[in-house]
Image (tube, rainbow, N blue to C red; front, side, top):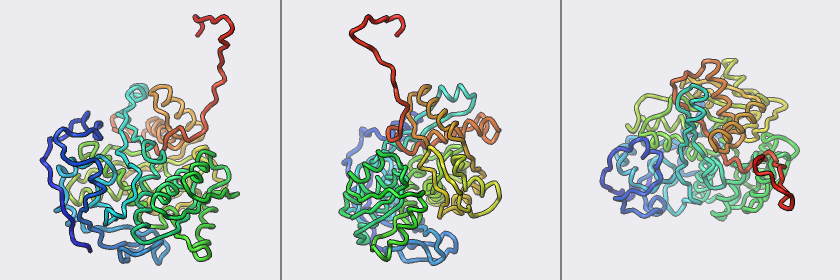
Length: 445
């Protein structure tokens, strides 16, 4: 393992109150660091090895890997005792508010390998009107649509591409329902890495256009995302690209786990009672569960965990079916369909990891109809002025449903993940007009 880099040292600051936590991104008065310190200062790195998520066998770090020998995802492991000695809450609080503040808990060893487009800390937005309307507890949205390329896919792909750069990968390929492809295209182009991307034929036009515009070669495929994944897998040997499919490389989880690191810090090193997470491939849910375990090991949080809720669409709910059946794997969901294209994943490589996290946390898996998703999207926009994406709206619909059936109580603080900006998705047309050449009846306006 490389020698420890120079550690930064800062004056300890007072604990943040609730308002300060939400103003997490504001510059502190006593800061002396520059806004790009996270990207320029070398820090100690603590990756020790990679580990098969199913079998537990070890693989060397700093080498190119896809799946383990058992064809299961690989997890990055750290010397957490070393992290505990090297990183303090006070030092962390003084760093610029972006994803790279957690460098000691991330796999990229050298600043020269970091690829960044400005991965900001995403805000926590409270929904007090809807909380009062439902008679429930505090509802908070973590709005991931503020990230580069407009979605939480930026977290996973910035890490995968940075590690691809570090490991000398020159061509990356992936299947996508839209947002992941856009993130890969943007970061890989920035890093000088060629990308080839395959998406279902009905992928929203804005996604296909942004993927191509940001430097990738994108193909529409007459099938679903797992059909696109088969093309990527078959092309590894023939085209020579690196398969960057969800959980088929080890580092997207590490990027997505920053949602958990960031969330705990924003809440004053606490966690919510329940997390509703839109679940397709489930990388973020798996990553957050990993993050909470690592944070406890280094002493930043206690043993308390949120109940993790995997939210799926009724038209594509393999994880829900497996959870209800008590199985560890989720067979392919046939005829998958939903307006929430980001969670239209018929079969997830990391199904057992999703289900383990849900069960270990005493959470559950829930499916909501497209009608409820649409109604939820409209309600949040009209009541609170927050435009969710369909996948984010699914989490609010799931919360409503869970509150009604008693799986969530009225005094629990819940966190909903809005995974992308709602502006990327088709919106209802507005046809109301006004003829300025005719008399205007202002009383009716």
